[in-house]
Length: 501
Image 1 (cartoon, rainbow, N blue to C red):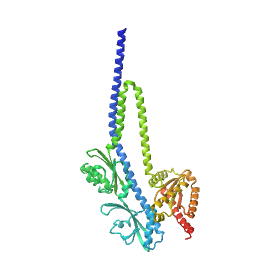
Image 2: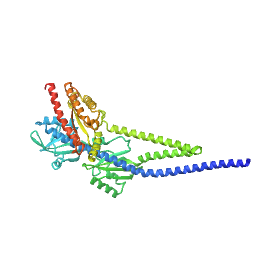
Image 3: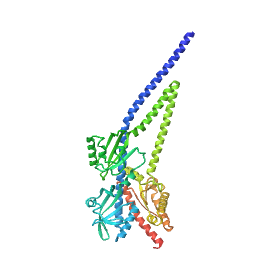
């Protein structure tokens, strides 16, 4: 009986050991197999993620430049309309009005051209045909967009439109134009990603217009010359054709240190290509980091299988869920912080012009799909900001902007407030904000008229609502903007009467 008991105990021990070893071997084999499959899946995902990420980034930056161009054209048309109504009889009056246009619409390098190709700016007058070759194209085009070099290698984007009905100082004026410095456009597009992604703007011949480095291989060189020794001539010729035909494309190549992927898209009407590059190893490392952590977790599972496979699996599940939840929350928080910074005006704390553009795109989509029914826009402009800046300094001007913003936010609590220019605000009203819009506008206008008497903050507002014939949000905005200018004149007259002028 004793021998049988000993044999029985030995068998149990051996069975337990064998069973543990089998479980351990199965877990180990499964871990290694899973790790191998994860590595393969990671490598396959890297290429897909890189292409999607780069295409979206390049397209977003290209749209930003296109929106900047369209906004400048819109402001130029407003500037011409404003100047045409002023009855200008002298160069001094013209320069004063050009300065006011600069302050109101943010057109820093705005100029008018008369029929003799004399260019009029806020500070000077000069002959323009020799300096601005694009002026000869304006007569035959509604809009002219050209890239020019000034002061050596510095590049500027020139936007011009004809002004056939404009007569000032007794002479016809044929065109107006603005000049956008490429460096300012680059600053608008740049953000801090710690050198992991790179972007550059190129001309059709591959010349680097932005002066930014497209990674450690292409650097600031000509796009095609830098790739000559990296890709085949057939591939290079294909991308030359894409640049010439203003289409998009992508290239993946081995730089010797890592695999690089770049994507480029055309910037409408400019003849430029926006290129963005990221090392695939950046995405690969981030994705692979998850695989490594999972592998470590599996090793812990092997070590503790002898004790309790079920308990260990439970602990691992809880750990994985906790880690995934924390990681997700961290990514959500980072995304929220970044979006908040990108969409917030640093001076006033309300939404900025970029946020307005995003909202405008969403609303336009609803208009096109027929989903939008009720919407109102209020456009506001601060009276006397230029005078305060000129007489008391920009610090006082900034205080006036903040006070005006506070006044708008106080009354339009049910709306989305945006600062879309130096002294210009917009409020989008929907839902309850739309229902109470007229009452709030009346209260706001009464308050502004009281402020005129008390030398307080004066903001001119105009408003409009969405109508069935409107095709885009700008149609509503323009009506409100036109009303705002009428209100501005009315408040100026009230102010003059109050001061006894």
